[in-house]
Amino acid sequence: MFEGKVLAVDLDATLCEYDHWVSVEHFGRVLKANVDMLRTLKDMGVRILIHTCRMNGQWPGENYERSYELLKKWLDDNEVPYDKICTQKDGKPFAHAYFGDNYVGIEPNKDSYILADAAFREICRVMGRYDDKGVPASG
Image 1 (tube, one colour):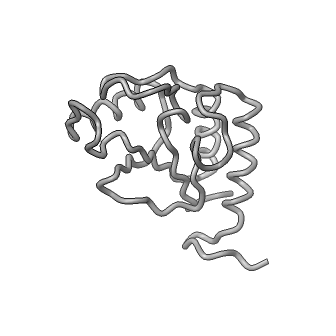
Image 2 (tube, one colour):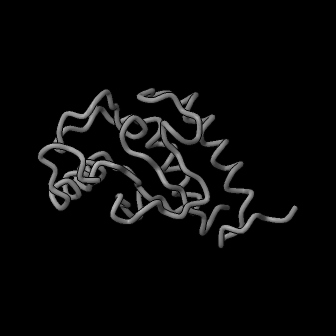
């Protein structure tokens, strides 16, 4: 249905709880409803990019390679579907839709299937506006 569409997903307060910066080793509790929603989108053919500011050089004790490996391990351990991890080094990734606490309307740190379902519907609506190259679909 959405084969070739791309979704960029924030990490903190979207896939895991986030209150304030603790350390590169610290990840909040997984927000299962949002992860489950990503699995559904992945099954629909959506490419998922994890877009995070965790490795932008502003946090004490941060080491890019170590932070990247810790993030990859957390995503894999929590069975979060993704195709690529994008960081500030990559710049803002191209996507048909962006999902996070500052993008498609979710409440930060909420693990709610009702809110995840609303976000899912909004993501599908937004993605339906574009063809595979990111050009607005005529209609």
